[in-house]
Image (cartoon, rainbow, N blue to C red; front, side, top):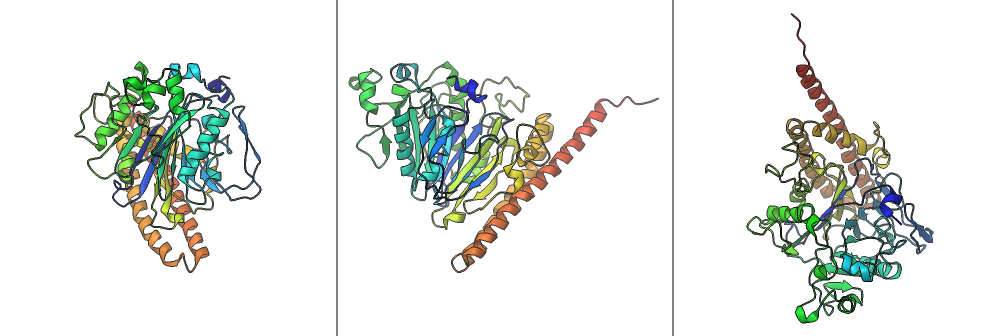
Length: 478
């Protein structure tokens, strides 16, 4: 099966950043990822409810994968492509406050695939969210369920997937057909990856920090992917692809983000010697991550937008074909309904706005749940996409206008959230239904206000473009 041909798309190519709770400044932990895919793939924001009578089989809509499911399923939020509402869920929290982000596309080495190839009708990226998140009660359980699925059905392609809850954050990387390794993210460091397996160390005796299939080491030794006589096991060296294509597509993003967070760390952008985990110079919170996902080698010779260069060899973090970027934050000291938040920016983060989705939301405004591959005036995705498309016609002239308006809106939303959360905490124990309705009304108001701002920006940009066009083609009379 040529999955790319069957699904009618290129594989998703993303960037992931994970931040430990000792680095965020407030004790929260954050898992964040961009979904860099196809600008025409409108995202629909959906809420699924708890059920005791869910489907007993998962049937993929864009591959031939099938698997049984428990009838009892937790509710969850999802950000699927418009035509696949029951797969490609991408990111969100379930009703217990466990979050998942699925997936970071990665690639196994030809040597590993020779001995354990991808399974044609196996577990593909499109399936890994909706068959895991509704059935898990912790981040660790998410790793265990996904790992068991990989071992049973085999992987159809390479992927990295994250899980987060109020106690732990985990990241899993699969390897060739049936193998995988997951690491618990450290509290005092951050992790960055872009379309390449990053894990190195694995200690099978340290089950607090590592989980893996039981044959990970023996398989590597048997097929000469790892020689114990030459040193300790290195997961990346044993199982992962690393070639010339990675040097400008993947290395540069990891290097750039590590330089952003840890500028004193000197390293060669052309060598894959980047640390798996690193310590930042300053705290990395939501504001810093918004900026990180807008990163495009700003102001340098490699900035494709500054120089109007669509052929720039260094692949930026923020690219136009991004469908959405999410920042999943868990604040364990708060009730999960407001303590678990997914900040989402539709489209290109650099010219987009991050909006909060509280875990306790019951539904989304209709505009966020509709839209397809043709622009319209109702879909939230397309209303935000209009702004960034107009902005890209003359980035240096129009991007500052967009950025200023959205920065102001994000700052206003941050303040409104603080005020709302204070009110919520005053009433949620004694008047839970009133608190639920307050949360729903507040979250909807932020989302609807963002659409108004986007529409205003479209009009402002179109006005400026009209004026510029008139000046270019004035043809004055006598």
